[in-house]
Amino acid sequence: MTDEKATLRVAEIFYSIQGEGPYAGYPCVFVRLAGCDLRCRWCDTNHAWEGGETLDFEEALAVVESYGCRFVELTGGEPLLQAGALPFLERLDALGYRIAVETNGARAIDDVPESATIVMDVKCPSSGESSKLRVENFDKLK
Image (cartoon, rainbow, N blue to C red; front, side):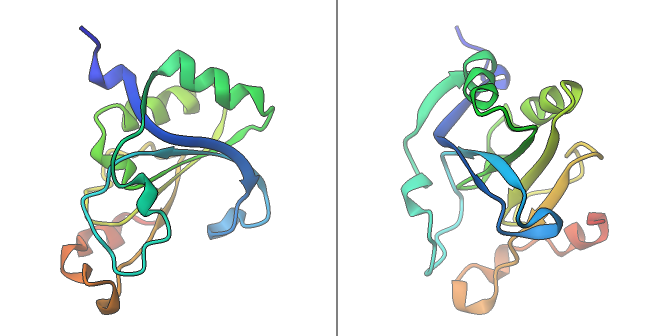
């Protein structure tokens, strides 16, 4: 039996330029996890709402390392839905990667590693999902 805390359900892993947050413009490896608990009207990644391929950490790390980039963002869907997300971020941090996580703000961010940059995609009323935002997350942003 596979330990779900040591696996990720991955929609895609790709190399691109960071477009948001304090590291906008930096090269980045994006690990897009599958699954989302929201259904925003204007979602641009609805292909990640479901499905995905299950990878253990070593498989995911091998793909990340193949790009030769030391900045990794965990995104989704909603990455914090997966039991393996936080342990994977901790693993990346221990390996010396600069890490970021993009979250929809509907889940607690308390346990995200201190070194991580948190990109919180605040859902405005037009999304149809603004009531799901955990406003207490604002106090944890830095």
